[in-house]
Length: 336
Image (cartoon, rainbow, N blue to C red; front, side):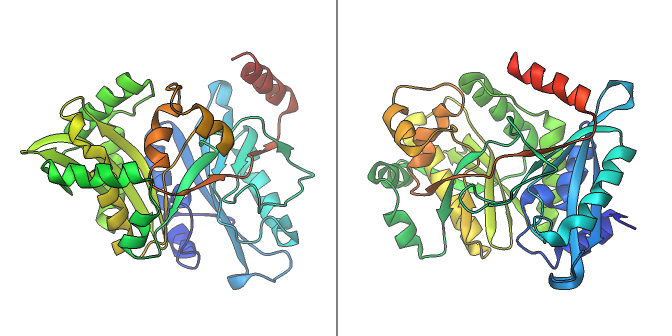
C-alpha cells in the first residue's frame, strides 16, 4: 500500500538518516493534535535506479470547511521524486490528496535555491512559502575554536561576557515556564506563540528519542532565556527560543545559543540551522538590520553574529487539484 503507518514510515527513514525535521514521524504526530492530519506515502521507483527502490514523503492535511483540505509536504526526503523515478510516486500522492479532498498540495523542497534545478510541468511555482525561505546555516564540523573564530567579534565577546557575568546554561523540562517566556518574547517581538500544550507535546515526542533538548540560561537560579533545539543525524535546527526582560545586559541568549550549538556538535551534527531571517539578499540585510526591527529583522542582528552562511530554500511548488478554489486562494494572498 502506498500509504503507510507511523512504524513503517520510521523504518523508511532509517535508510534516509538526513531527513528534515519536518519529515520525522514525530513531527506528523505533533501536528495531528493541532488541526492537521498526517499521511505517509512510500512508493516504488518508476525506473528502479534509486537505493532500496523506494520514494517517500510525509504529507500534512489541514482541515477546511465543507470537508475540503489543504495539503502540505514540508521538506520531503529527496529520494528520487524530482527525476523520472518519481512518476509513480506523484500519481500515488495525487490519489491520497484527492481522497482527502485537497484543493492543492504545497511542496517545500528540502533543497537550496541554487542547487534545485527541477523544472515543473505539473506544478505551479508558488507565491507563498509556509516556512521562512531564508535562513542562516552554521557549519559545526570543525573544532569549537574554529567555530568561534568564524563568529562576529561582538558575538564572541557576548558569549564570554555572559560567562564572566555569571550566566549558566543547563537542560530544563519546565514547559509551563518556557511557554510563559515564549509569550513574553512574542509580545515584545510581535510574533505568534504556540500553546503550552503544543510545546509540551513536542517535548514529549522528541526528547525521549534524544532528538530534542530544552536548554535554559540562568543567573543565580533565575531563568532568563530558553530554547528548544532539535537534531538528527548530521543536521540540527534551532526552532523555538525565548527570553524575558531581566538581566539582558548579561547577554544570556548568546551563551545559550552557543551551548545549543555545542550540544548539537556533541551529537555528531555537522550543520546548525538558525531557522529564519528576512527574505532579502545579504547586501540588503547588512544595509538595513540596524534600523529595522519588524518581522524577522529583529532576530537577524542576533543570528548573523554566529558566523553562518546565508541560504535560501528552493521556492515552494503547488500541485493543484481544484483550479477555481486555488484561484480564490491566490486572490486571498494577493489581498493580504
